[in-house]
Image 1 (cartoon, one colour):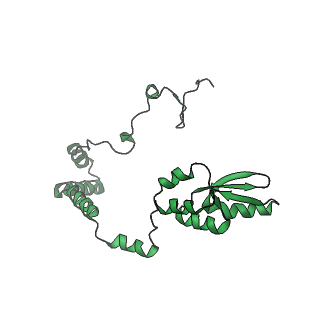
Image 2 (cartoon, rainbow, N blue to C red):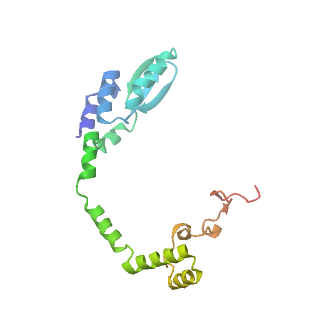
Image 3 (tube, helix red, strand yellow):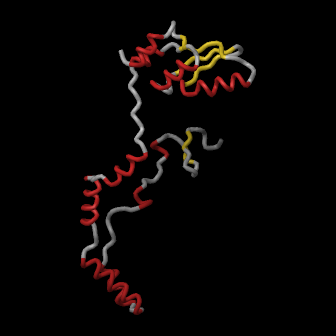
Length: 182
């Protein structure tokens, strides 16, 4: 049995003895559902919300009669796994200064994709020709440069095809299977 199952086994027929036991349940599983029965209503909520909602009920003139575990709580407890601890803020800085092999791989890929000496020289000559106003040289340099074959930006996004979804595209990013005349 895990810790949550052990906690539920200690309860008297699934009833919690008010806020102290709800707080104990909250430490184990803050979102575990509890059934709250009041004088005029009943509702379920996560264990972490019980105290706040109890205060609202009392402020409204009603009272909390009892708190219990709803049906299905045993199954949830059987599949329960403790929450992962949150990393303290002091540890975050270490994550940024620790060695990161994937970043080193990105750096190597960026260096491989860096412009060659020939490309840099072509860019320099083009800038000089533009500055001098020599349009014939600019035209010759630009004709010698080849555009990248890889699509970039919006060119990578495929065109919308209504036949793929069976709906109607309204031009605002909404696809509907309703009649286009509506």
